[in-house]
Image 1 (cartoon, each protein chain N blue to C red):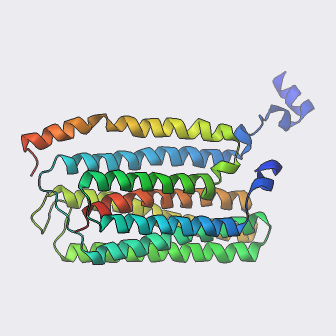
Image 2 (image 1 turned 180 degrees about the vertical axis):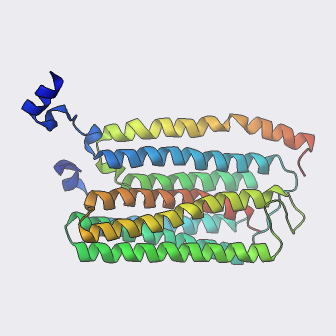
Image 3 (image 1 turned 135 degrees about the vertical axis):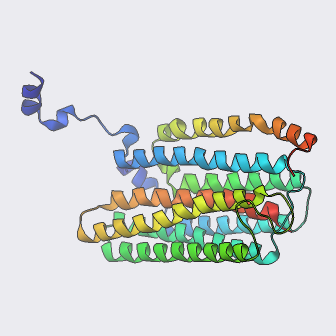
Length: 103
Length: 207
């Protein structure tokens, strides 16, 4: 790590706050689940919270925020894009469901 | 001619500057993390696809399973914090402190694996198999659950072993703080994957 990024890095007190934040998000996820919303609402909410947790972990626990910004832009957008393009098959899953093929 | 230039200018003249200002080992670990992210992404996507296309997926997990999952989440997130402490100590050249925190991280990882295996054996005892669902729901549930959580658990166990190897090498002076930091990257990645596995595999299937 360069001297510049080493200076910007926070202390353990900040990371303890991050740890507490992640645990709070886990608690929110469980609380949401036992509100028994619809499956779509629950899935959307849980995915949003999971991505928030992942972003916090990647930026702070994995120190991506304190590295050269080019590393972030080199790795993350393409990864998110590749994860997103896997979603093109969802309409086919609903087609299979309407056929009643999988029981 | 190139050999003479190398001798005259020193080997460093042929070495490029580190890409993105980080050691090559660390960049390689990032590449591995990205590839493994896509692997887990594909697994979780295929689970979602199978689930949506099944008319009788069901919600078999009682509160006991969810509570166990929450405890596992707390253990794994805490191990991320202890790994951070180990990396910080290693970078400050505080070897005893770094080794202590690496040991705590390994212990928390082992606790996670034990809790997970306990859950597995409980489900197997209830009749769950790769393609057997004792509740009468979709047979693919077992395959999805055991394969995704099994792949994650394998990553945890490998991570524990790697942390142990790095800790021993760091103690002997064979490895330095960069090795500890690179191992920390892997461990945090395992944590990030669980942040998706727990909600999608456990909470979405909670009764």
